[in-house]
Image (cartoon, rainbow, N blue to C red; front, side, top):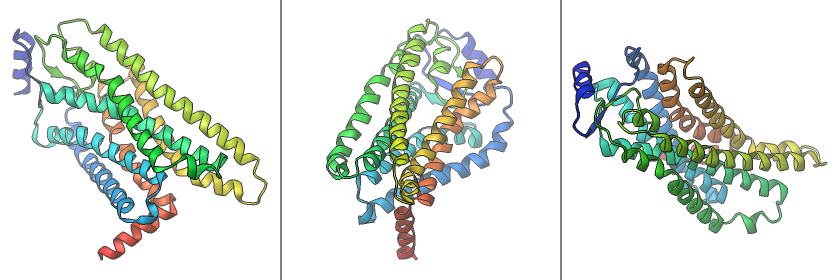
Length: 318
């Protein structure tokens, strides 16, 4: 069925109204083996983030700026997961490969927008830890609820405005022929390659915007932790350095997860001629699933206050 639709789409000159997602063009049998672990990771990500959000909402002692920022990160994780993984599982389980024109570009917008939103949230969280360790006396006056509100507005506005042109440019291209996307998701370049027009501007804008947004965030994160490390090394009280580092240990681990997986995706795409297409597709899917699954678990295990809040929540529920 897919072959016949693909062959028809190759020779059709009518405007495209929907696309077909072919997850693993060369190894489509992979999807049967991957459906179970992906389903378990998806349920873990949804359950863990929901538990974290409910705990922070109900536990009054967690109504602090640091945990509000963590709640924002969990919300972004949930939206990213819900945007990508259910459609992937629908393809694996029910062979529902078609996706409408508008739904495809909406998914593209959310993926391109929410990824830098997460890196921007990590940057704000790094600044929060910098103020807490390097300027502890000024922390209550700098990191306030009003600061979190302004930071949240900045995170949403900056990334929504600067990434919106990516799906807009892609949607304005003329799609008159092939409509088969060799990917599990509506990635910008995977879709734009199907157009009958040149998409050089689209490619350049995504490259510049992506590296500007993510690059600036990681530079500020790097400087924040450099200042934190310098301040910690000056502590003379016994155990003070270990206590100070433990307060930002969870945050650093999450940044490490996020940046490592992102780096792997970037490097494999750069070396795409040497890396099989199916590996690139799998890495793209996992990048939208592994960090959301790990983020709440790391904070839940390493943060005493959250761990106590979860135990209290489970205790009242039993």
